[in-house]
Length: 93
Image 1 (tube, rainbow, N blue to C red):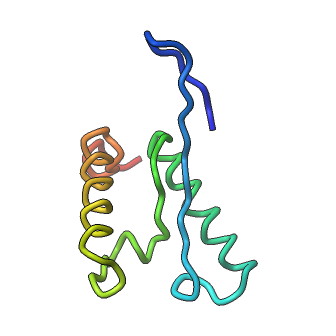
Image 2 (image 1 turned 30 degrees about the vertical axis):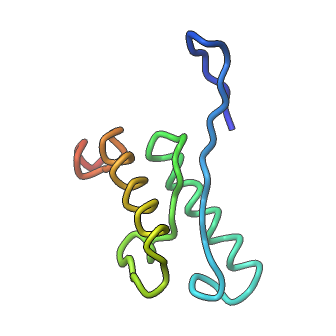
């Protein structure tokens, strides 16, 4: 987490890496590694965002998510795209 200044005073931001078992990993060790990779992906996108494991970013299967969860994931992806988090939108490095 980091702290940034705002007109209203200090604010706290967070980058989060998400991985789920058993889809992303079968052992706790591997699950932690996947979540760590997702965290680093979130930080590379500028921070203050949620990073998903690569398999989640490539294919969003509606069978895994309810309607409300899909709406939240879609909103997060849209917010990320508009903040410049999409590498394709800003030119791959």
